[in-house]
Image 1 (tube, rainbow over the protein chains, first blue to last red):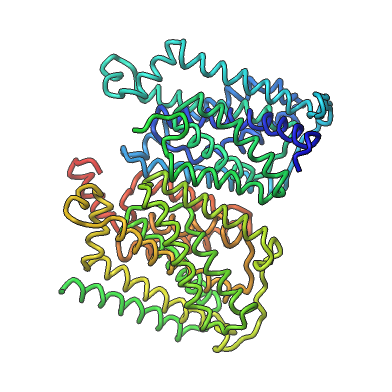
Image 2: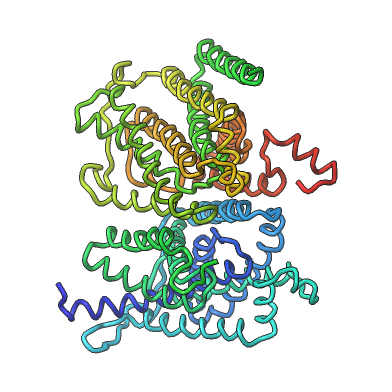
Length: 290
Length: 323
């Protein structure tokens, strides 16, 4: 049951998956922290990004890792436009409306993908898809290791962007005190849209790291959306550290749950954590009670 | 008292119109449309009780739908009950799941987005459980044997189903009417508009919201039971997947939340729209849901009160106030 030859690979696997989860959750938590909205279309956004990576590889032969800058910029622009042109207009200043509009957007994206690509599950082949490295008793797939490192690097860049640049200062100012920021001459709608764009850009990066070892179909985002919400709620809405640690933790829980309970029942561990945290500690492990 | 009477009169007119259409026409297309539109109406009305009158937005109403559908099937196939005996169990079971989720969520003060997420998570947990245990038939699903007779609640033509679903819809209309004019309904709407103020005035938000979710879930369970009686089949994805939750909430919001006729309008309009697109584009996968999504975004953006609240929205716009 606790044989280390099974346990350690499973743990490492969980941590590498968890890093990608963390990257996805960072985007979600940034959007929540700044705009105070729940982006329900986050999973659908990831699905679109995965199709983007897939098309770049299949049609233009661009390696997923090289597609990273394209995807990051593309998803940023998509996010910027969605927030500026659709979500902001629909909100009328009410959170419920944003929840509904992002739900509507996710339905549209998911079914547009269904229309365009049918419900087939697709994956790509790269020279390194099946490559592995041995770490101690564990064999880890190379794409997963790259994903782990890449997710950490992108997360570090994101934290630097928010903490150390003028843009980051503007974002934090708007997040904390919208009216005050406006009086200081910050263009609030612009900063909102940039934050939303950065949130989706994280998905672009995550998709590039994910696809070589994963697959894409129109429903693929559904699996991630609750996982990402779980991480964000677990780590505390708006907390970057929380999202990073929460992502790794959820990755491990999923991997161990799958090991001991089987693939489908293992997922229940995640939702169980989600419901428990929402009920008993909605501020999360790292968030302050508001 | 007078307003009570007006609502009841309109309900009688509505039922009369449906009955005249149903009895006078032999058109399969029309009867099928009525059946599915009334079914969508029931789901929207169920969601509207909690979401519209109570302001608690559930994204996982399929949870109650699926519970009703599974109990209706299992009671007949495994417990040897007749369809009519199974029906109250389906409603009761769905209501109990509703009370369970509601008691947990409301006890810990989950509101707004958090409530939406927790209902979604519960629906997902139930979907995975239904996939993992045996008595639900796991991934294969449950196939209800085809035995057409009134006693089995299975009808040879859509007409019988129209009568059946009409009963549920009228029940839901009466409940909504009661919510508009009763003390309970006034409390529920007060909680929606300002929970703290309602509590300060002596309203017990926990009990009222629990009552609302139980009613809402029971009606959703009736929808699930109806579904298996019509289609004779249920599996975890159909039962607890996001599709039904979306259908219920979009129709209620499009028609107008917290109104008596909004869910009816929304459901008939969306069903009409999806029939028209099916005729125009054929059976393209996903096109229906794209329309649902588009309509949802457009309605929230331009008509936040839905169709039933159109005149109020226009008045607010023209009057220069913020709609």
